[in-house]
Image (tube, rainbow, N blue to C red; front, side):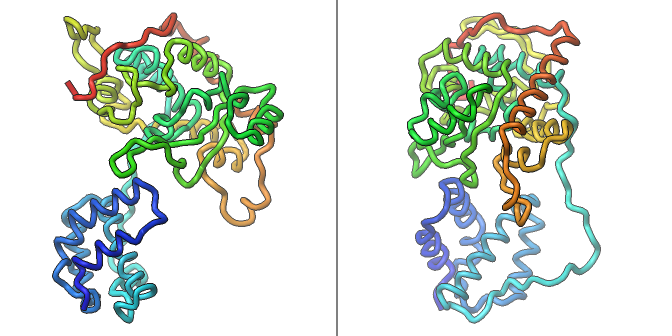
Length: 364
């Protein structure tokens, strides 16, 4: 007879194996949808019919992605109520074979990631954010790092001009120096996120710590960028602090992707033309584009998935291994792609890093 309003929060407080973002997301969904609807209903009295009625209302009220998250969380609550806490005999969430008319899942429409589009984004980013913005765009596109967490969490000691010699772990430093003596590489070691309201360095998503070889042109960009500032972060905000805490979408990504009119005065800047292929799209699609390039260039699947921070399942994952030769080939194809683009020019490129002194975190 424990009420759902009590059980949900008791359950939430016992979850000690979740990442900070998962904990925050669960609390939000409980507070916004699940608890208000079910709070006065005893856990053991919820029937499959009641669950189906709620499921239907959720589907009618929220996006497909949010609905999927809500139903998954509710299912987990009910499974734990059965298996762990013995609050009911069986779950009201009954999974059946598909019934009714088949509906093809909606997928986000994507275009092939073209270098012209990236160049346009990088030029706008330079106008908004200086040389840091220029390098930020090219780094996501040519490493596949996850924005924002992994990009925000890239620290100076793990950037290719310093790593692996600067790695604080002596074993990893020794292994890195031996393996990456002839190519440049950076280390994805952290995400920068809020944990209980405080900024903190946490593990990458899925514990996907990894080393990413980088083409020479990108290494040179990072060297120039690091020489232009003293921040511990590779990509400081316009004001010089960490990117975490800024309103990236408002003052950064919207003008970069959607363009912006010219401004005069203290914060003067020229007009920026919208990037048609990316206007209204997520910056995360640059990571998707990197995966497309790797596939297009025919790289080994194990090397592609490892670079993206994924693990191969089953026997293939057990027997496969990323070799130095695979990584060298990735560097070569990425550098070749860069050089082909610039040979098709002329294309504009900034001459030197020019830090931008003002942060628009307030969105103004």
